[in-house]
Image (cartoon, rainbow, N blue to C red; front, side, top):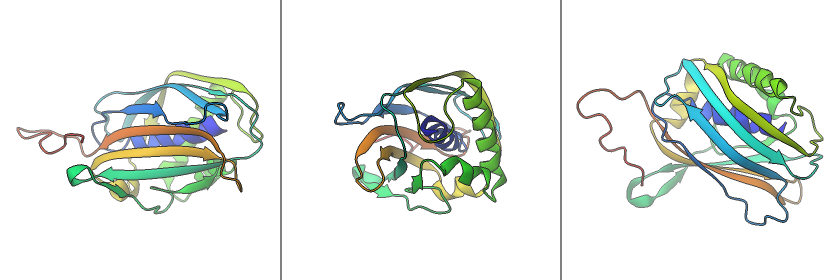
Length: 206
């Protein structure tokens, strides 16, 4: 279920309109307490335009049993002179906190057809690799190889986050105590497909 929730979020973020210089790193600090480990993520094509196909490869491990968990998204937009501006949570997009065990159901029951479509396809993807879909989460490996998700027009989601460079930190925590189970940092560049003589000017990552 954790991998399912994370893959849906990655799909939505990576598949926003435009080019995707995509980087990631494991930002867990205390490796002895780490329960979730991501070992690889790749996404393409570059550039990707929504609607369109997204090819996603993902490998991760659940190192310890997880009875319940929450997912905290910290999304910051890169500004001038190295500043970082927090993107607020708006309709489930941005710097939001979710119940990890019910995150998927909330997307499946969403009033946004784009969220429903991505969730349904991600469900089939996780089922195809026999990963756990319900809490509690057992120790397991999750390996998704070049799975194609047909990304719909994301509509209002693309307008909430807008054109720009972002760092998104995904923290998985124990409810109540806030103990960190896993941490993933994603660098993405979002924007409309760029064409023309001056394409890319002013969009260098800081």
